[in-house]
Length: 205
Image: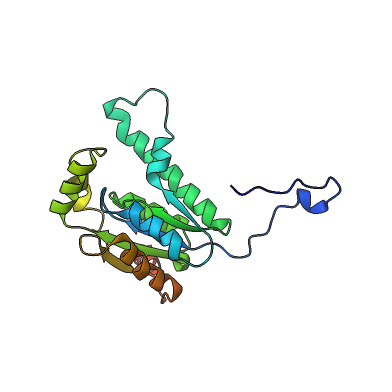
């Protein structure tokens, strides 16, 4: 675990907020539940250059405590959590941190929200694909996911276009997916998918 040195009382830098001259890069893994996003993220941390954080939305949902929300209020609670997650991602990136974000864009507003929060040129949007029968098989084998969740998300997560990179976890291992994504991150062209999506969203303004 990283630790920081105790500041010297006379050190003027102790009270100076550190500069962040450059924002971080965000690799956004977009796929359904059980598509393999987390496995790819773990492999990406091994092959990407420099220091990276893995920020999965599931970790934010796991922080929730207290009494469970009634069924009628559950979606609103999930939406509030997701909005907070988006802003945490944007804040970490603005602080100069590189992030691998594991998050299904299964509701269109999630994409629109992130388009307004992230720096498009510094965001790499990855489509993590997998055929539905294989997703359903994985759900049954895992036993820790809501049955049918992947099917509910399947038609929505990739409904928008474009993505920067596409990987199919039914034919590629997590390591192979990570190498393909890392290669794109190192030499990514411009405009990025987020730049094109941001431009398209502003055409009607």
